Length: 599
Image (cartoon, rainbow, N blue to C red; front, side, top):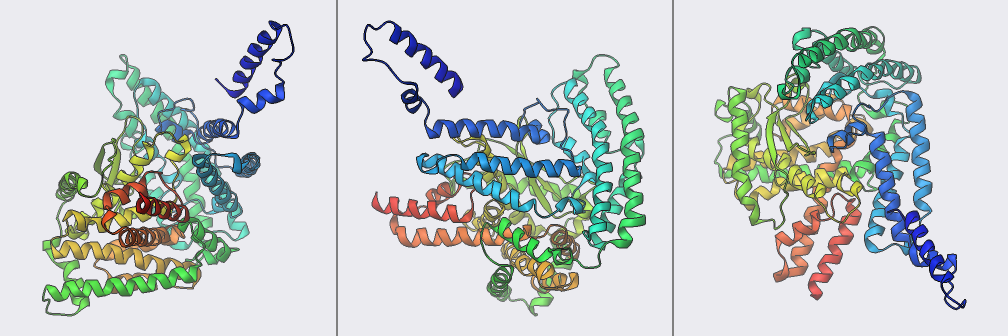
């Protein structure tokens, strides 16, 4: 029952009560009734529920992933009119939010208010920078929309038909991309040439597929036969082929022709965001956004340099302990080239990840006291995108679907065994799957909180989790420990090269060389990683900044709590509210330390 309905019911009861009385001494005035029934928390919670419903309508794919199929045939448009309307919507949401009296909210709702307010402020500031002019990169865009279909759950014939309807609309988004890129080109906003070249290669690969094996057809070919009557599945496949041939492929052909003939020749030679209009200001914003701090790019760059020096000394100690007869560079070369560290086929590499995941699962009670209910799996990154993407990534659980740790099996001879433990703890447990699942399973919080994602918290936790392998004993082999330090070094170098390329005039070669000099990562991995930072400015800053804050808070808790410190309690405090900005996280941990000391 809504508050308005509650109010009407109480007014009706009050009127009945008054009419039965002989005097006016029990009369209730409507303003007084308002004070009794409607408080700021109730109004605010209704507002949050209403806004969440609107957000799902605006994000129909996300709604489908959550099991809400009201918008199952809809897509999010990408025309310029949509982006302009979105700005107006954000500003309206902000006005509606600040209309609430913050001081009258309870402590839980004050946190909800702060998080929603920050989210809106971030979105409003982001809208001042036209990212839609540079919406294509090798990590994703309209060229890989078929992967979205792979993530959905199909429980009926209608679900497959809904996806076909979505695809029929999606050709408009492909065509709109061409329009947006043309306008961006005219205004000086382009991707770097190396990014454009990789996108063209991806679209070429898509267009070179035979229709019968086309990535967009796979969903329909693999559809569950039990959901169809005789002949219905064949008709669905026939309809899908016609759509792909007559709408999807022609739209990609037009986009690719434009990219090759117009966009690539005019794509910028520079690689940094500072190469587009207002690029330095834009980068300062993305640095604040992804780290949830006010650190400047220069400050972040210097933090990275300090971390590189610290981690390098730890790596050199391991080399010394191994009694390696050579220098640091020769040891890295040994790790990159010795066959003992590599599998020669993707199947063995995937099995190694699966075995590591099963090894870690029973070790978690050593350092945690609350565990997620959602299961997870380990699967390969799709073949079409594997050559262009990073070593691994994670997609969270959805209704009827587990979380998935995606492992890159492309060129297994370039993916070392000593990365397997550290990657598994980061992407699966106790890293992303553990944290994201616990957030989605939070109780007594508004729904938006379950899916809120501050990069510094989420990726900071992922990187922090890598160090937790020490507590679980999975780095007993010194090469595995060196692999963990390599990944820690990798994130420290990110601070240096991301700020370097986008803010300080570094070249791609500068970034690659810093990696080669300080990590055992393969050349292929390094190049893919650097290209990722070029295409996705600022995101790579979040990992190390978030990790350092969590480590700082853990050290403080351990130092101040003494015998009362328990790492299980600390981890519970970090994770129990879901994703929050680092300053808010620090406030809560400080409160917990004080409460524990006084208990």
